Length: 201
Ligand SMILES: Cc1cc2nc3c(=O)[nH]c(=O)nc-3n(C[C@H](O)[C@H](O)[C@H](O)COP(=O)(O)O)c2cc1C
Image (cartoon, rainbow, N blue to C red; front, side, top):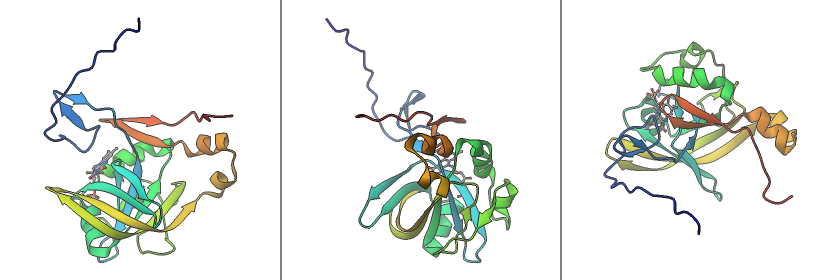
């Protein structure tokens, strides 16, 4: 007979922290992961800002809608609500340290992106810059928001996608080797996608 795997149940009254897996209670980290991205925005004076986000996903295809959860007090949310635009930059694992450094940067600095050793490059459709070291980017226009307490879900309409030529031209295997996509696992922990498999040959 198959051995039954024991399950533990937790009542969920809220999640404690943004910087990690949602915590369901008793310090237990629930295993639901999000891809780590860097969101770039500008404020009304066109001063750029960068911050990591991992509560992010695609929500619709026609039109292409991407959404993420953000604290209302973060510059990212403030900028998007005032300018109506943002860029989702896709980093690889080699940027992990810089991603965490970006989370440490508080307030408005003229050279926030350069300060963590990254290079801002112009976007094609909006004022928020893309990050050169990231391997793909989505330029987005704010479409819809939904607030929950101190947090807001931001839905953006994708205006333009850019992907490194190497990725577009590579085989499936090579593509993911180059991208080294990362997910946020837990406090100060990340995972790297290193293996790609096909369900059917
Ligand atoms: C790995 C990682 C993932 C994060 N994901 C999110 C997220 O999904 N939503 C959020 O609001 N903050 C998230 N944060 C926290 C913000 O990035 C951080 O508070 C940052 O300083 C906010 O910057 P800003 O004020 O420039 O927007 C994350 C931080 C780290 C280190």
